[in-house]
Amino acid sequence: TAVLMARCGSNVTLHPVTIPPPLIDPKPLSVAILIPAEFEQYVHDDEILVRNKWSNDLGRSNAALFSQLFEFMFDDVTILGPDDDASALSIDALVEPSIDAFEFSVPSQSKTESYAVWIRYRLKIYDSAGDMYANWTLSAYGKSEQFGVTVDETLNRAAILAMRDAAALMIMNLDKSTAISALKDRPAATL
Image 1 (cartoon, rainbow, N blue to C red):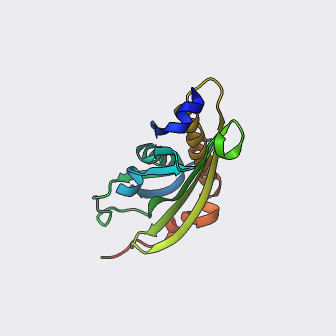
Image 2: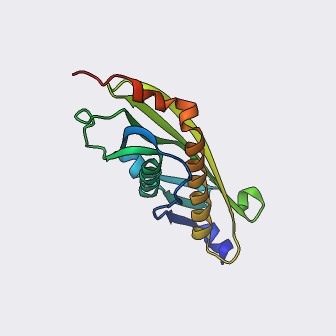
Image 3: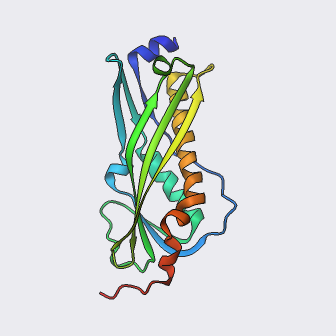
């Protein structure tokens, strides 16, 4: 059955991914997370070996993950949608996530029983004046074996593991890679 399903393709829609609260102290920053429409509605369509069509809907799950993650990482977090204006907010930083690339492999490509997912995220960080402060990319990876579950569930699990990998990388490296904590000491913009 899995071979027949793989030949026909698949539609994978991720449900919101959750992570356990990390053992970190939140940074004393007021941060707004701007969730662009392209991020919240991100769908990757692909055709493998000319006969397998795949559709991977990651958007809402990514938006939920980033919202939850940043609530753990910072003292004060405001979630903004694509039409919200951050200029009236008193914040230290604005973070805008995007997906630069999404790739996956299926057993017919890798000649294994594994499904693998790679996601490259980009975080643009702006200071309180609206000037770009940092532009950070990070790549995440997830792999899942297909044993007794459907193709959709296996690819879904690999994508969830990639997203959790990204969350761990952000927890460990966001401040090291972007120096976002330094924005706390910057004077607020005067308009």
